[in-house]
Length: 372
Ligand code: ADP
Ligand code: MN
Ligand code: MN
Ligand code: MN
Image 1 (cartoon, rainbow, N blue to C red):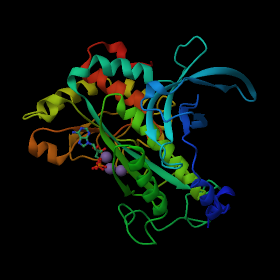
Image 2: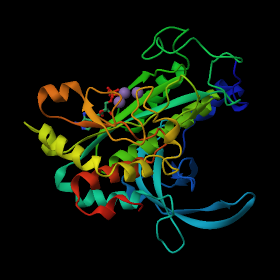
Image 3: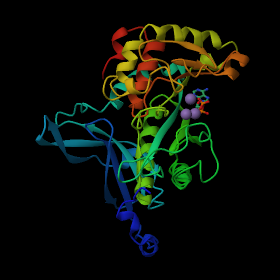
Image 4: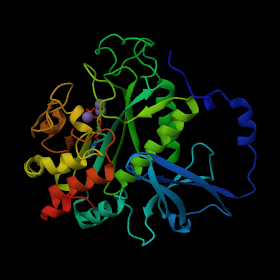
């Protein structure tokens, strides 16, 4: 069996005595930010004298960033942390807070991996359309040895088939983490709307949404923070690698579901079809921002097998899980609703994905899709 981390073996009953101590009216605020690799998360905590009632009451902060370039060369730089949105802290409980921050360089311009600012700009431009997003976040649990959690040490579990939405000890592995993460999200104020076991054993999914505009990226990044933090307590890892196991095993995606006000109204299907037509013309540009490495991660996943479309070809269809864009069956029946972009990788930056979709579908300026 796979091994859990050293910290997970510490006595959690002893911990409980301290966690329930009164904290003298003060408030612990944990600042969260995205690493300069665009994927990992960091956090650090400070004490505020009173409970902040809004994001404006939370002061800016800073941290020292390690920049690595080439093999072992690195340098350090001081970066600003700008509070962007606030949630309740499900680990230390009320009145304590979690705060997702934007990272700025010393010239106060966004860091290379701060894609929130560019996303926000586009979302403000398309505000009248009331664009909603819902993201499905797939992930895979790993032991500390990097092997899928609960898999036999040598070889593989039985082939795929029984695991998707599976129930039973021989099918579902690691449900404790899924349950605890779900509760943590609800407590924090994340719009988590579901969870299920995935096609590969030890692979799971949770869904967040619908969220309007910039909120999708904010909520998803904090939901990811909660996932990694819950996994830490259990001593296992959650990887967002889009293809953690080579061979006849499903990869992990970050399907993005999308609707505008017009699409949700009677006869909205025609607007969905218009959006798909626009998306078809910008396939390559989208693929470039649907994983952190310009498509290099997703190429292992988008093969045309395992419920994916081939990375080189744009396709769309009703109820088609092998298409780039799927129109859910219900939406086609109702003649209104939303569409699903199945291309984003599990390790995508939701700010870049939602920005690309909003600008392609709702803005005419070609340049809007690229970078930030
Ligand atoms: P799938 O059948 O693809 O597995 P899921 O049930 O896992 O679908 O996820 C559906 C997602 O669609 C959820 O994230 C939900 O928030 C989102 N969603 C539902 N309605 C809308 C809508 N009108 N606009 C945007 N997203 C939506
Ligand atoms: Mn799903
Ligand atoms: Mn799924
Ligand atoms: Mn889906």
